[in-house]
Length: 434
Length: 162
Image (spheres, rainbow over the protein chains, first blue to last red):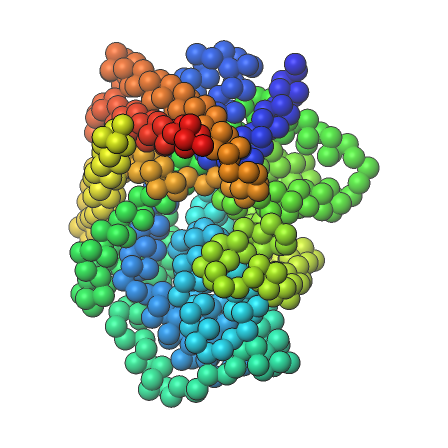
């Protein structure tokens, strides 16, 4: 077999292992190992596995991930999610579909710190779905709004996916964070408008709640909520202003949330311990995936697949936009099956050189677009992952009802992606200011 | 066998707790460095290196617990469409392959640590040897293999029972 053919076989074997339910992290490093063994030698392959695994685990630049994850789980276990939801609801709950609209904002903020589509959908689903049921929301609207909103956070800083994209493509994490802000909030606004429009047209699916007074709204900010919002602002503000490295921003944020929630007595020792366990577990999951992807990436690079693919794409008589469309449709299809984080790690060594080096697309823009397309995969029928997660939380709602509710959100998402493709400035504007 | 399952579960849980405190120490180290660098203008020497060392340790120590809780992402829904008996047999197959690969990985990471002992490689700023941290990661993979083994035994039992 030529290196290229062995690469193709490797990718096929990887997908077979995936279908057989082997954890993605093991499958990536196993296939990477087997491929390197075939192309070089088993002893070299084992050396690569050992070295790259330790190098990934001990990397200073990747140590930003556990810090932001810890900040997120401290905020979560101290009940910030619930209070955030209550506050946003007091602010906009009197609008038609207000609870579902508030869910979008909560998903965006929680998803940003947590960085996983599926975890956000599950967590916010558990908070928001019972509330929406209490206020007689139509199940198709309530479940679909959480499934769609679950994928929002990956665009809004601090996003773990952007950190990983930045490190593996040698792009600045700050710039990627900045690039994601406007598209993330734009998509959130699109979703909110979709809900408002649906609830306006048919008020029975999202009845308006009682209007809260400004006094009540300010009261909802108390109990540790506004302090934590300030810590978020300092941590991210310090990062953008260049005072902190990403790891420092994460550590300062986690420390600030820890101190403030402990002082406000919303975090006790038991909750602190749970936050630690959730953080180490999530970090272990992410870092083992990253290590696997690094090993897999070494094999893919050696198989010359990216090179062959890039020269093939460069030699095509198609305009760059058409090649980009093909790449995006591949992402969409894979996004049906694979978690966004794993998918991005897996495909960057293959597609990044084609899109950025050969076709000349902006690396920040490409990062934002693929994250959005992957977000589309997790809610698209018939296999969208987030829909199944929500089905797990709302056991009494049939799957077809959730999928029926997803369509308007899917249309909003497609419209948003189209807008970003037509006007790349939406993505590149903020990073351009710095 | 019951004893082995309980032992691996307990061991990985304790290691994960230790990992949690190590993670807190990284946070405290980085914050102290920011404060002493920003206020006193004297950053803590070697922060950069120790963040890497401790992070490697706590990730190594938590991968087993993550597997115990079935938290490493896998794509389940295609397999779940098949009859339960076939699912269990596939579980035994992938479990065996994972076990062999992960225990070999543990072994080779330990080898890598040993090579670091022999070459005497140390970090540039604090002149700390690398090998103890690499051994901790190797140990993490060993415990991960034990967790995978105990899950494999569980699946084999289910197949035999049917």
